[in-house]
Length: 192
Image (cartoon, rainbow, N blue to C red; front, top):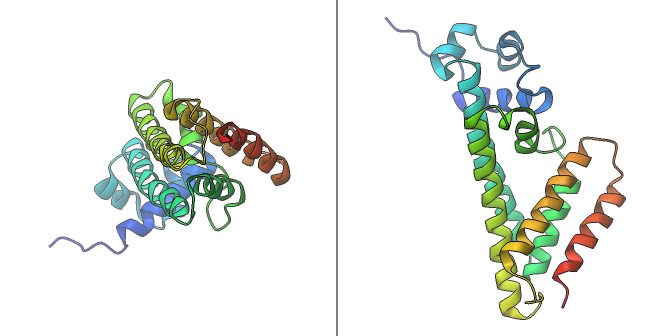
């Protein structure tokens, strides 16, 4: 008779995500995962596969969470510029139980150059973020609030690069005031 699972899969996947996010892939051992997730090693293998497969599943979950969060932040804005500002503010001010910084940025810098699956997922995630920004920029250009002197895709890439830098600086002792100033300078590219 097969044993039933004694854990909620989504809940333990989020625990693994937070541990990988905080410690990175290489520094997180299977024993760390088992202890942090609160499951047996056999259950980890049966449900999620090996450590690498689990890591990829956490990246996929993070992609969905981040996509939904950034879209929700953007939807709060009344204008395209305000929506972009809200995304910057979220990245700088994000509070809660999640580790500081960005799981994609961390994963890209640790593994993407030598792990094709991680590279593909981080590129997809970054591409979605740029597409969100590009759509907002196009809206703003059509509404006349954002300069039409630059291609929306180039502006989106530049803003996104700044956002990545802010995520990296958030993991250091960077002052939030300084991060907001950096965001302001980047946002000034949108001015007419």
